[in-house]
Image 1: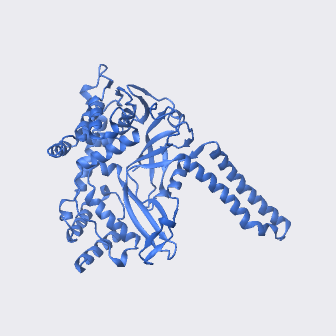
Image 2: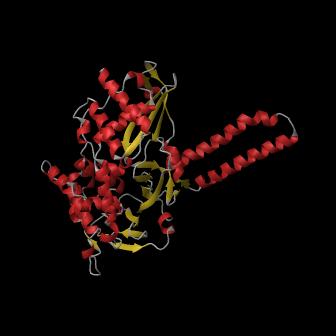
Length: 472
């Protein structure tokens, strides 16, 4: 790495620090700051002239606003179009209905002026385009105002889409599939077909700052901005933080990766917190037994015992809920930050110690996506009825490491529920919040009805997949 590159990179870091940029959404960048950001990118001599093709976010914001302004005039009624089941295709129907209720997602496929260009560009080199099939589906689900009347067909058969995904991915052949696999396939395939990012080598951190969190994050974010540029990545992608700490020298290595789905093994989480509560109680008694046995006054000892009893009673309440197969959604996010011990054959090579040592491994959510998709995995034991406590508003402020000074809250917009005792016999139903009339609807294949009681959304079987939208 030459001196000129280091100087420019340092200028870039200083500029980010001065502006307190960190991970503010690109939509919030004003035009002057964007120009400065582009100039810095141009000055960094890496492959493909990164800055020359950087997205003009100001125009992008204007386009998004125009889409959203069309919403009420173009869509006077909430979409109540069902999808026919053509042979164990309930997983497709439930998945599509939840995705279609993301207004920015639907409006993009219906009205973006560049969508046809992206389709034409991709189909010149490839046979199949999922983007083209998706655009057709959105137009069926979201008919124009002139097409909406009492005689409008309220359901249709996504036969061509079913054939398309089976041709493109073996996992969906023979009428088989699962919503989590379909969501992953749709998001990744649409992004790959539409991505306008630039391919190039990653920027290599210099030795001096290789353990500096802010420096490593900024380098990763710069690569992320130039490589992931699609409407799909803008909505669904975000950054996960990985910390590996050497237990010999306590030096922490920081790494980052992209995530678009979060999967929680609910039975593992339930057992984890049962064990954690038991360990906390044992530790509390063991650490304080000497104090209890020390006769420093009956009143003080009685107060101390009362405090112990209060703590244990609270823990017993928590333990009772877990023993009755009830977990809270925030326990899932806490579990996601659990430390793992890497020892034996899993030891890491520490670049500070220059040898292998035991280490801890922890993952965090560095930045929040616009659309948060949570999958609650029960494995093959679908008869497990562990209930998940969740609510309409989800506050992740305590679980995001890159702070912007604002609370990080989400609103529930979609739920996929799974019914059945085996994967072969499972049926999937979607509950979706309409952004047109702010009412909840249930989509059971071709049948669509309004939900009168919100408890119907959050009660019943444990949800399989939750869709949350970030509150701006």
